[in-house]
Length: 477
Image 1: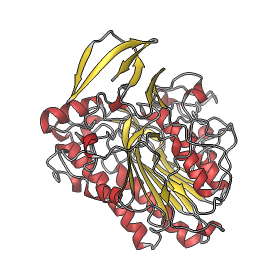
Image 2 (image 1 turned 135 degrees about the vertical axis):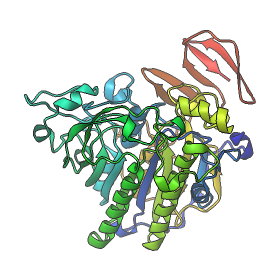
Image 3 (image 1 turned 90 degrees about the vertical axis):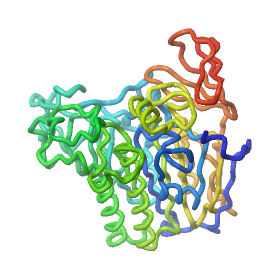
Image 4 (image 1 turned 120 degrees about the vertical axis):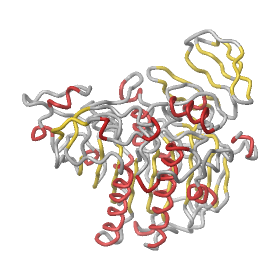
């Protein structure tokens, strides 16, 4: 079981930073976030040595930096977790309740006007910012009458692109200088269009048919038919996002010297449907989904190699994270056919309040500042990335900014560049499960989840889970 291979520590791991001072923007680190989709705790082989396939390049990244073994997503579904990454807040800060995943022209954005985003914060410190891939925090679209459209696949046919673009609440209005995105899951939820810097060059005018795609051993499940643009490429989605990310980085180095950059690569992998690009098929013993993860591993390795080739890897902080646990159908099929536990021994999966729904891989690599070979069992959340990066770049967060984000003290400089009014408070981590909460106390294997049915002793892998009704919830041990 993955979690048994790591030494137990009950203190915050504070890393010695090798940088003696930051004085100019040129000395600030470049920052890259690789945000995987539906990637479970057991889907990376350094977290799960019994995985049905290997991820050697991501494993190498972990060995060259720090891997967190008690990291959690803000939600157990896509859109609220992405809101948490970009805002440093739980979804109820935006909605007053929980939040679902957008479909079709769903919106408006969870990132409301006035919300400080990661892009805003880093741009204020001199960064050039870009996001590439799956967006999925909501966009505003209008019909011919200028009326805002709601979600759902049918409304995709009603979009008036002249009235809707440039998008009023897309990435370029939320802190990003450059963007190339899909509105929702790239291969799952119509509307299937590419949006570059708020514009749709090729509107959706045709209907996508699932039968046009390769159904690899039945893994095409969850590819919804709906409106798409001509030339939309399902099978090479992540290669396209990778290329756009690299183009942004190389253009930055050629035309914006003296400024650091911030890039987000938001992948389709490993969200359903399972559609690895052709050159990655048959590469693993883990079937089509194993090949899908192999593609992710290769792209991560290529990106790290590109940073090295460009001679910027030493002072580039690369973060690798996932939005929630593994898809339910994927989890069960991988267990049955390949004896692969995508949740890494933890009960639950995507959409669950149980641990497997929100415990995710989290890796940080920064050769100039993070000593290699670090492992931390400190509990943390994706929302904490915001305050930690604010600390790294010397940005003073106001009380109303990133309110659910705490500096992880991943980095300690010899002479602090600013006061640190926010200290990490890891008493509990809160995840959203649709409109409910799941609470995981720090340094504990107990999780309080919403009551759905009464339950007594339940078995999960080699753990015994005791479910007890407590204060309107179920205490999971």
